[in-house]
Length: 241
Ligand SMILES: [Zn+2]
Image 1: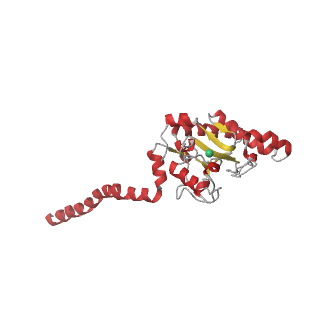
Image 2: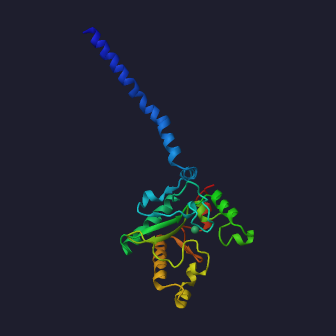
C-alpha cells in the first residue's frame, strides 16, 4: 500500500508540474511570437496611436488598399506588408453610420476601402517616389511637411460595391488625376457625354451617405472624404509618424 501511494504521488507531481508551467510559457513566448508573425510594424504603430481596425466594425467592407500593391499611380507598394484600414475610433463610428445608410438605400451593397490612416513616413515615400519637380508634386500627393488628414486617421478614400461585390461604376478609377474625377464638373461631363448619369448617380449615392454620416468631400477627388478639417485634426488627434 505504501509504495503504490508513493508512486501515485510521484506521478501526480510529474503530471501537475509541467501543466502548471504551461500558461506562463505561452504568455511569455507564444503570444509575442504570434504578434511578430501577424502584425506588421505599421499596424503596431496604428494601434499605439489608438486607431481602430475598420474591418472589425464593418466586416463586409471590401479592403482594396491600393498603396499596398503596385496597382496605383506610383506603380509601387509603399505600405510593405501592411494592407489594413485603420481610422480614429470616432471616425469609424461615422463610417459605420455611412455603411448603414448605404444598406438602407441599397440592401447588400458594401464600402470599398482604398486608403485610410496613412503614416507620415509613407506620405514621404510617396512624395519621394514622384519623379517630377517639387512644384508639380502637390497636384498628386499632399506635401508631407504640411500633413494630410489621412496622417491623422481622419480621412478615407472609398467607393461602393453591389451585393455581389462588383464595384459600382464611378466613371474613373481611384486616383485618376484629371477633370473627369472632379465632382464639381460632373454635370458638364454628363452634358458632353463623357460621364453617364448612372456613373454620377453612384458618386452621388456615395456622397449622400458620407455627408449624412458627417464627412465632407473635396472638389478634385470623388473618392476622398474628410471627417474634419486638417486644422481640427491637428488639434484633436496625433499624426501617425
Ligand atoms: Zn484621400
